[in-house]
Length: 346
Image (cartoon, rainbow, N blue to C red; front, side, top):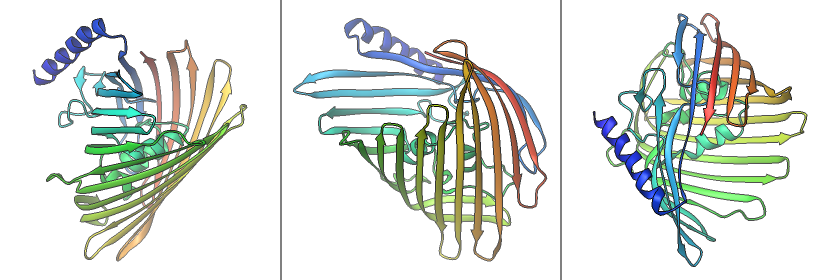
């Protein structure tokens, strides 16, 4: 009932505001797929899922011109479980878990306050052939969706893909360079104090970006073999690049993380490569990721994931897709997966 009331209130706000000004937008993605997936070491799962190539979401965003080059901005968006009609990604997720912020922007840049997508997540999506696919994107799977049985989780997974309580600044574009900074106090959350910075360069067909995350005083239960360990600090560096050759677009990324507590250190390095190739009315998607983990007094472990798919455009806003996946991890049986789905943007 609470979720329904919030949704109705948000829709009422959109309807009322849209009559007064034309710069408020209702937007989102509805993506649903049927798949059979088996991650390394796990039993196969067959299901209908709302997170094929994109995690389904809806939102409202707006801009008000305050004069003198100053603008007020806001964005409220929520993930949707299209398979069940449920709000957010799970019953424990905040309703507006994708974004909930208000800010001011001008020629000097943009300042935002509230829940925002983590800079590391933005960099991960920007330099991945599968963007934010949480079901079949190898990079995303390694960072945010490790199997319960697997030993691998990269450092970005030490916090959510969205950060709450964030004060952020994004610079204007200067000769192709854009810088950003996120700062978030602990506020009694398990994520601890969080600071992140990024620098991205885009020039013609080439783009490259680096993000640095620093988490202090967190309470992360790293529940991976050989035993669950409570980690308190994390540092992550995420570097990526892409180049559009027109006949193909190339992607590459390296993510390095160090997790610490007074007695244990865990290091994880994820390297990924991918490509999208235009073919007919759509494109081929291919991506590979490998993560290497070292841990105090434990044997090294690795995980390797490869995905291959085809995304067919029915229109500018609607597409059909099919994806194959293979997943391997040290000491576990191989996993495979296959899925088909449809996605609509509005």
